[in-house]
Amino acid sequence: MVDSFTATYPKSAVIILDTTYFSKTFGAMLFQDASSGKILYRKFVKNETNRDYLDGLRYIAERGTIIKAVVCDGHMGLLQSIHFCPVQMCQFHQFQIVRRLLTNNPHVELLTLIRRMFSLRKDEFITAFMKWCEKWKEFLAERTLLASGKTTYTHRRLRTARRSIKTHLTWLYTCEEHPDIQIPNTTNQLEGFNSQLKRALHNHNGLNGANKKKFIDGFINTKSRLE
Image (cartoon, rainbow, N blue to C red; front, side, top):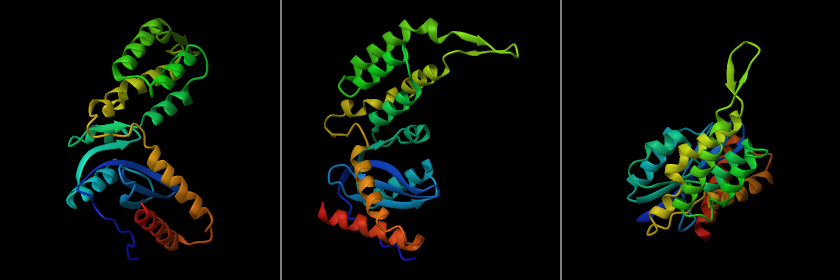
């Protein structure tokens, strides 16, 4: 099938990355210019891989665009693999990770803190988080004796939430460290675009695979002309 996606490449851009799925084995990996809202790169995928994301960034750079920063949803391998520009992990995705894991106190206390992440400065958030870690240090170290005679951590979900925040902390406030670049702190802009695309495609449910791809490209091209 002839590739019907077209793009105009800016001199420089902050790029938002995300993949939206239309079925379990069919998705569109999109790279959006945060300033204009235009899609600069699109790849149809069965599942998203860090290699595909890196290839897409390389493709855009080879077209002459200086990539000033990248905003993504927190794939560890990807966060660690991008060295040529600042990387911002979507703060909302971090909030969602923690929210899925937590249910009650001291879970609620950490959930309240992660909700404040959006309005706190980096140093304020780190200070509050470290205080929480110290306050609940012994609680988090508690172990439960299993019938087998082995022990396991009692509060595993809370430990997982703590580890997730610690792991991603390096990338959660990149936007604050580079105010001149104007990096978004979430991928919400691209996810809003993806929601529009899904709604539009839902109205054309009878399309086969090839025509779905043509429809998606047509939608992206039209939106880019309107931006």
